[in-house]
Every structure is written in C-alpha cells, then in structure tokens.
Length: 407
Image 1 (tube, rainbow, N blue to C red):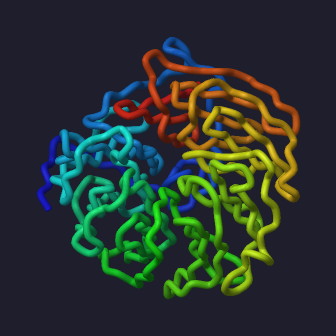
Image 2 (image 1 turned 60 degrees about the vertical axis):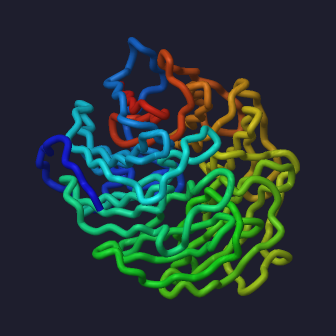
Image 3 (image 1 turned 45 degrees about the vertical axis):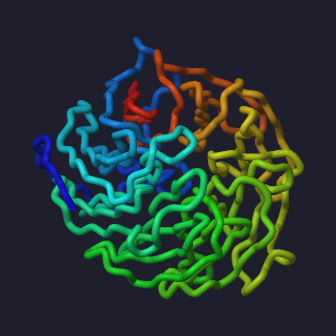
C-alpha cells in the first residue's frame, strides 16, 4: 500500500468512549440517525450560522464521522478513481490536520451512476477505519498513521453490477462488519479492529445492495441485520451463523435497516415494499414476523427514521411520509420539493432534518402534525450525500464540499 503524508497533524488527546453528543462514529451516527447534540441551528444561509466551508480533494458520497474535536472523511479522484483520500480536520476551525493519498487496487471509470467514495468510515477512540468501493480497506490512528490494510478485491474479485459498492462499515467494540452485495461473489464478514484479520465470513446469494449492516441486541444475543437482494437476514455477530430471514422484498435495496425497539424498519422505493419486521424467530420468518407494510410510503436511497413513536420516510419524488410506528398507518404526508433525497433524515430533540439533492434542508417540528420550521441552503451547494451532528456542529457533505453549521 502506497501512502503519502501530505500535511502535518495537530496532536490532540483522545476522548473517552461513549460521549454520544460529541461523537458521530459511523454511517447514520450510531446507526439510527439520532443525535443528542445541543445548539444546532434551525436556520442558516451564506451569512448566517455558517462556521466554515471546505473544498475537498476529489469527490465523495460518504458521510463525515466525528470523534470529539476531529472530523474524518473520504474522497476519490482521477478519471478511473486512481487515488483515494482519507482526511482529518479540526472540527472547530475546519483546518486540515492530515491527509493520506492511497493508490486504489481496482480502477473504475468515473460515472455519476457508479459509487464514488460512497462507504462511510467508522471511528472509535483508537482508529478510523475506511473502506472504498475499489475494494480497499484501511485502518489509521487518529494521527493518520497507517495501522493495517487489506485489498479486498483480491478476496472477492472485481465488482459486478451497474452501480458499484455503497455499503458502509458497521462495528461493535472489537469488530468491523462488512457486507459485500453485488452480482458477483457476495458475503458478510467480521474483521478484527486491532489487526484486520478475518474473524468469520459467511457467503450470501448474489444481489445488489447499498444498505449498511445494523448491529442490534435481542434476548441477550447480538445480531447483525443485513439487507441485500430481495431479503433481510440476521446473523450472529459471534460466529456469522444465519439466525432468521425475510424473503420476497420489493424495490430498491439501497436504504439501510433501522431499529425501533423490537422492530426493524425496512425502506424500499415501491409501494408495499417497505415493512416492519419483529426481531426473533428462526429460519424463514416472512409469514410470522412481518408486522406491517405501508400502502404508499417509500424510500429511495435514504433510510427510514424512527423518532418518538413515529416513522419518517422520504420518497424519490420528494414526498415526506410520517407513519405510526406500532401500526404503519399514515399520519401525514407532505411534498417537500422536486429533488430526490439521498441523505438519510436526522432527529435532534424535537426537530427533524430532511435533506434533498438540490442542497436544501427542511427542518420540521417532530410530531403528528406537519410543521415546517425552515428551509435552508448554501449558495451553489449541490446534492447533500451525508451529515453528522455533534454538539454545536451540524456537518453537511456534498460531492466536493464539507460544511459546518453552528449557532
């Protein structure tokens, strides 16, 4: 692996584990798009509540991750994604602390329809772990020093399918979880954080998915929920054994599963494709554990959000839906605009943030009545791919920009 140190690091003390309002450790934060952050703005513009605006090297669709006073993000560059970047920034000032430029294993022609640095990293108190759709998996410490790396394409071959890989890493205390879902060799695996070795690997049927695995605990057993192809499967995180599955799913396999108590909410872009699945059971639980399927609510790339007993979906057409968590019955629906929505909704206190591909953010009052508090944008901000929310900082990521908003 060829690594080039391009800037110096400001050495800062590592934070304590578990400070949820100051860390955003992976895709959708802790996997649910909820933040305990305080002092996040409701309104912003070029002249209001804009703390900093960074131009990134290359292009990317991943979300930023945050460990207290540091932000980490990825990008790729070159006509065939020859270079991949991992970058560390100071959260307060936006100053670049370090960057690593990595020569990618697999060269893929850049196309808007194919993933570009789509998987979101994972960060903990010791390291930041990054996976690129080129098959490259790396671990760095917080100072940007390489810890280990694995060229995964040598294990599963080149990516087969029209849209590349987009699934992000998931993690528990000791392991990373990676789901490779494409038209070639597909599998789910656990990888040791410490040294990158394989803990277990379980083969899966070939099938496209950008959904990120979800780590849950039910009846004392930790499980990994994986959406791929036309099904949802739960695996034991200890050994990779399949526990239960739901088959026959309709629609886009792009949204990631969302946990709500003993329910897992699945989004899809076809009517009656979304659903709520009750955890538990063994083998095929399609007939016994699917609790509800909404008549109209759909999601395209973004994942469902559960907050205060309600479920929020945003469709490909830019329509927001609010459903009862217990029944799946529609509470309200509202068209937000003409743009698609790829970034997943965010819940902070009594507010819901919805993002679209025109660079707009719709801030709503959470609840059973649709109440729009603000519609915000920044000049020339394009598609919002991912977000992060920690105390005093809402981060928005578009293809080539990273923006911090603060009151």
